[in-house]
Amino acid sequence: MSRSVLEVVAGIIWRNGRYLAVERPEGSRMAGWWEFPGGKIEPGESGEQALRRELREELGITLLQIEFWRDLVHHYDDFSVHLHFYHIHDYRGETVPLENQRMAWVDPARPHGLGFLPADEPVVAALHDGEAPARTQAGFLVDDFSKKA
Image (cartoon, rainbow, N blue to C red; front, side, top):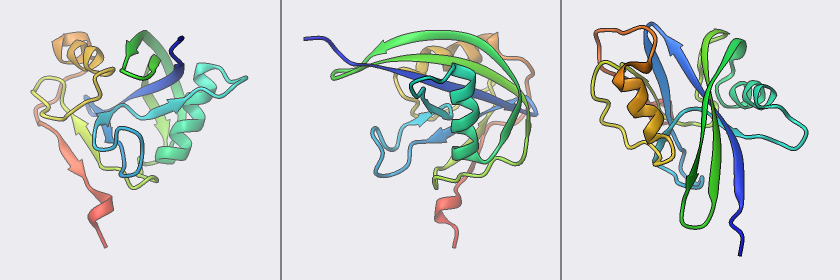
């Protein structure tokens, strides 16, 4: 029995030395876990095309600069995911949680305290071990737009 493998892109979006984390919204697979924004690569799409589409749909931003960083495969109980991670330093627009997800700008110089998806943990560890660009002094702030009237 072969396990299905999902091809997925993830954007490490930087602002003022912090990277963006988003919480998977209620009703989605693995809801409540934190992750890097992104999603599935559709048939016929390149990783960059998928990332541009996903972040426009999910956050309302237009990517101006994309830099491939690394990829990894993670095996969950019932499926596997092949993640392609990209650094994003330049984009147009303000990040808006269009899927009512919570967002946090995370300082890689400090412990984050967020429950990241197991597949993302090696990347989070790498960012917090100094493989991240700039550093800031604050921790993280959660923008919880879903709870606002």
